[in-house]
Amino acid sequence: MVHKFEEATKRPYKIKANREFLMMEKVLLSEAVNDKSIHGKDNLAQCPLIGVLGQKRIEIYDDELTYLNDRTKIEFMQLSSEPSRHFVMLAMDSIVYKYDLVSKNLLFQFKTVASKAMILYDKDDKLLCASDKVIRLWDFWDQKEQAPELITACECVLTIDKVFVNKNSKSQKGDKLLVVIVNKNEYALYRGRMDFVRKGNTEDFDNQMITNVEFDDESTCFWLATDRGNLIKINADSGEPMGEPFRVATTVD
Image (cartoon, rainbow, N blue to C red; front, side, top):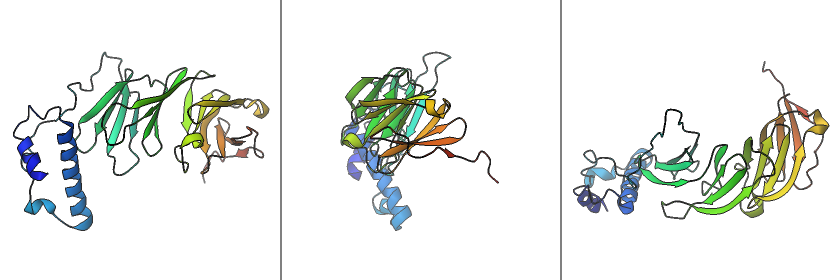
């Protein structure tokens, strides 16, 4: 593999859009760094990589991250949570870009509106993108660096202000995936492939504005955090509050 990499660097115009070369570069460099820092083995000493320092940026596509006008800005960014992945995703102008953090190369890009939220979940294998009214779930291909497959697109019952996913729960497989849409004092719960479960609000709690949502480890309940410093625990199956709201201290001694 090292010798193949060396030969490839001699033909920069042929390897510009070569996915195999990009993955080879990533594997060789990451393995070399990990072996030296973790195991103390310098694999490059006996079989060095030649042509890396003189190699210019390798791109899968010719498209770069470009700003269409002066008001254009990066709307959302998601870093891979899995240590072996090493990638970052950027949402801008209805386009999502995926960059490799090791090689700093653009892996792929695809069009989808993510004006309200962009969230990685299920061990970085899936992506949620939200606009004002529509949520789309995308599934990345295994062992392929190409645009993901659209799982589902759902028009929400609420105008979307904030989106929360149980990405830190044990599992988001199947019906274990919980998505809560928030708008002021209202929320809507979705499960699985954006199957609508119910709407709810904080009318029984003086219409407090919902500012955040957190889920339990087993995806059986979630907490609504309000602008008055209260935590309201909701049963995911019944939608009923579980106990009285818990008052969170506004100051720390």
